[in-house]
Image (cartoon, rainbow, N blue to C red; front, top):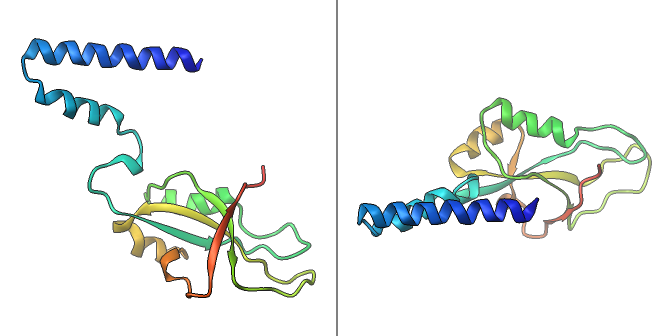
Length: 143
């Protein structure tokens, strides 16, 4: 299946190149190729992106808190586009190991900077606002 999509992409590029040559406007080639490659939030020219996180609300020994789908729905319902969300945890802080205690689990999203205030109103925080002692690490999300 991958070979097929690669071949289709190559055919599409060749068709575009021939169209440009036919139009005798070679400067359009670069523009068309750049536009044809922009398919997601991260490839838009001039868009400033920020990473935000939200606490999962999970507690130790319990199957509670928010899911990745729940927190994604917060952004989606506010019409905020985001890249593939990631699971992670805050580093530089420790919690007592006792059932019912909080965890440092978070969900991380990359959004357009223009949506930061609205995301913060939904409960998300800018990762650049983490205290200098704190950071985060990403982990594979549970399935």
